[in-house]
Structure formats: C-alpha cells, structure tokens
Length: 349
Picture 1 (cartoon, one colour):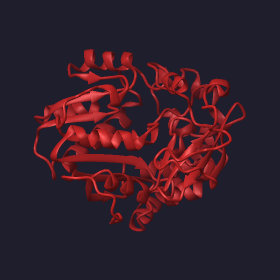
Picture 2 (spheres, one colour):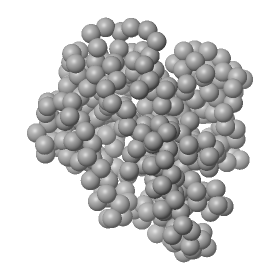
Picture 3 (cartoon, helix red, strand yellow):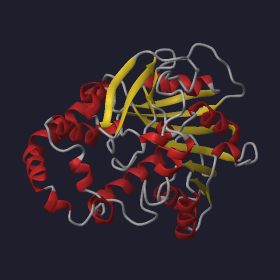
C-alpha cells in the first residue's frame, strides 16, 4: 500500500501525449471512458480512464520515468527501515504475513521465493524463518541496499526487466499490492513467468477498482492512492492479465482482513468530511506522520473517534458482504505457471 501524501510536479510528471490521448498500457487502445475525474489536489490532479477490453484503469496524465523515480526514492515513499506504524498495528501486520505464508504453502513446499516490492522485508523474514530461500526486489537502489544490510538477505534493485536473472530461478513469486504501481503490468507478469520454474506459483494482490467500496468511495476511496497507484485493476482484469500471460488461476480471495475492513473504515470517514485519510496517517510512526501531527489535527481526530463506534462494525459487515458478492475492496490471486501461453477466453472463478 502506498504512502498517501507527497509532492507531484505536474510540469515534469507526464509523457508528451498522455494528457490528450490516454492509452491502455496493456492492450494499447486509446481510452475514452473516464471512470473517476480530478483525483488529487489543485497542484497534482489526475483522471482515471478505464479500458473495457482489459478491465483495468490507468491514470492520466501518466507519470514519466523521472517522476516515478522521485516518487519511489528512499525516504519519499517509505522509511528505509524500522516500524511504519504503531506497535499494535505492526503486530497485526506481522500476523497477516504469517497467514500469507500459510496460504502459499497450500500450493508450494519451501523453496526459492522472490518478493517483488518487498518493503521492509517483514514477509521475507517470516518466510526465511520457515525454511525458504528468500530474495527481495525494490525499485530504488538505496532502499534495496539499506534493506539488504538490515535483514541479511539479497535485495535486487533497478529496472526489473533488465535484471537478467536466469530462467526458472524461483518456485514462488509474490507481488502484494505492487502491480498497481507498475508502468507496464504485462511485462512484469511475463518476466515473472520466465523466472518461475515449471508449475511455479505466482501470488498477486491488488485493490479492486470495481469493488463495492471503490464504487461507493469514488475519489474518497482509501485504496485509490493516486499518483502512486498508476493502474487500477478490477477482479476480472487481474484474472485476465494472469491467464493471458500463461497462468492457471487456482484461488481468488475477495476478503482480506488486513486491507478490506480498514479500506471501508477510512473510506467512510473520508466521505463524512474528515480530512482525507486522517486516521491512517495517525497510525503511522511519528517519523512519517510528524511529531506535531496530533496537535495540528485535533478537531479531525476527535470527529474520527466519535464516528468509530458506528463505522468499525459497519466496515466489517460491509467487507464481509462485498466478499460474498465477489466485489471485495482488494483481491488476491494464486496462479500456477502453465507450459505455454495461450490467449483463449479467460475463466473468471
């Protein structure tokens, strides 16, 4: 999940033709259907266009390579190391990583795993303790070097397509809330397939732009996170992308207790007129949120606390309902590598 604040320089953050002719980065079609308009603020605003063929949205204007480098440089996107949230939230996050490990081990025995967008390495630490040979990847070289020194396992960096890793290097590859940040999702999935051994497992999780909370929240939806999320997948769109690149879908999860109930909670607060994503920011480590945060945001936090007794149970109920409708706020897909790539009609489980 991306940090929800930062600077955007419109003068250098778009490609030459992306304002006038937004295109789908998967199929190349020129897009005309605007799903959500004016996301962001007066100095950094984007529209989200939707491809009805791929079932995937894309922001316009589209960030340039230089803008993406700035967005994900060390210190601007996340802390180089250490806790990101308070102790209670960090405990819950680690528990969720252990549950992710259990889900993976339903389909794969301990072997070599690559976690693309490994963050602070919490998930890989859990996997390594469970007997897996772990490798991480982060786009920014400084972030990767800091993490590798801290955790003691290899962390790759740079352009993922240019890493030149040997074919069939890994048994499992994971992209947890990463693909929505990637300029070329098809290339990322194709390269992941090349790196997986025969029958290897790919696990991909993204927000679902056509979820119940996504439709209700609109510009106020917590998981929208523009400009960090440059692609906006639907459940069907993610499955189409994987099956079109030579993967057989084994399991689709529409209920994620780490992301979906809180997505509802923060979205409901945003819709109620509370400052955008205020609760989420308040849970962060003081280094990220600022030590004077609570003093400056007192009124908004009081309103948030007053609404929590109503919104917390409502968020849980809504997360359960949307999952039963296959409209969960986030979707996680487990898929295995097929022997060949076909472009037949996809199966939506």
